[in-house]
Length: 418
Image 1 (cartoon, rainbow, N blue to C red):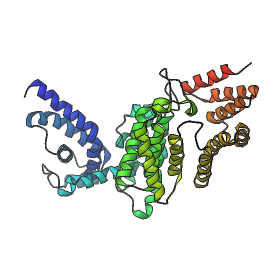
Image 2: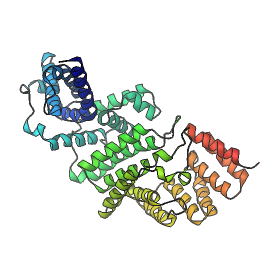
Image 3: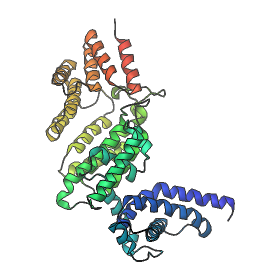
């Protein structure tokens, strides 16, 4: 085989790793019953693939070959090691793996189910919420501990500890590697959707750093959302995917070429991704048609109203306020109250919105939330109350750690008349 052909094979292996490794890992976890053993088997399988595929060519079913090879390598290694606990002994007693998978393991539907099992295991309620997020990003999305740490402003060592402890908890508590029974599904699905939403939000509005968004995290969250809708097309899964697509559709218009923040009302709507908008609106409609309307679907419906408005001035703010009223009933939250207050200000004028935001801040619930102070500052500015606007902008500036938002707030302050 020529050097060029060898390079081509290696590129094929790398491409398959990017697209198939998480599915292969999910199935190996089912077959081997342990995260660490499955991860070692995954890497062993790809290492063998680099050597063997160069010699023998790429197999007809790379995924099945990798699963079979990984399982073989894992059990072979276990047999060569001392039997130090019952779980290892049990694996060592398994029959000699064949070079091909059993019929069930070759079935695409079975392998796809493994991905769903992996997501639910990573988001099991026995694990702490921060561990759920770290496990999902690491095991389902294949992000490194360094990437996860950067996303959540945490040290890599802290993320690594969370993952190690979560895996130990799964093993010690014998958490089943399965999609939960139908009666448990609603509560368990909520945990999964929360993790996906958390990942997307950190990507859509980065809490720290030099960029407004983290496209990698948004992309991973959308990918997870697609997996959930494909394998478990529940209304709220469709609503969340629709919401993420509609929000992400504005990505190109949210910042200037220099990275400065552009507010929704000032964005160039010709830059919005119409393909994502069409898909997002379709998902919202499908979710609404089920009659099982939840918080993600309602938020997606609000995003759809914005996405379909030809301009900021033409936005149906009355419809948006009504949707926020519905959202507050389904999911009471001071942040949702704040967003509703901003919509009321757009519908009824800045004074009405300012009254609502001031009431929320007086309760103390959003006192450390920079967007609440920024929203109040903007309404003071519109009303010509310069001193009050200046004070609120300064408070928002103290609280935000994202550099583009800090530049935006400083610019607003500089534009206020003395």
